[in-house]
Image (cartoon, rainbow, N blue to C red):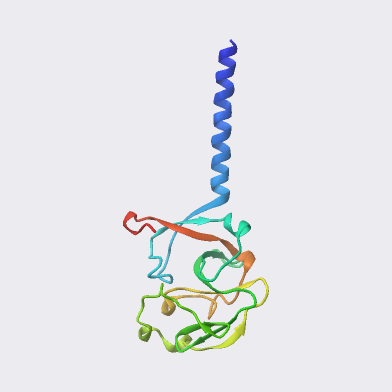
Length: 173
């Protein structure tokens, strides 16, 4: 009888641990599919990505972080790269990004910038306010970002940081 009770307790404990594990994964991570081409070549349409939601609570934002954004007034999730942090002076000049007067190395952009529309090639210098972020898509010619539709992003609208592509398997990074 005692062994039966012990087995039942172990089984119950196992189920509780599994439930706690599922809750932890659900609260800490987000599995999303990339829609659109705004982050090419870094992320391609239909890539499946793992987003670490917990990372926004335990680490600060950095230049170059790829993040998921969810604005209150929109059902859409956006994937963008953080370019400007609070207090940074941002300027787009001749299709180059300058942060605090220094040209940013953007080796992740593999596009011929001559193919990029001049519509957003130059923007006046602006200082990123406290608790805001300036974000851009890597595919600058096909991106809704801080230059246009999205504007500056509240830090509270960041859902998490993209950690990896897990599908398709030949594009795992």
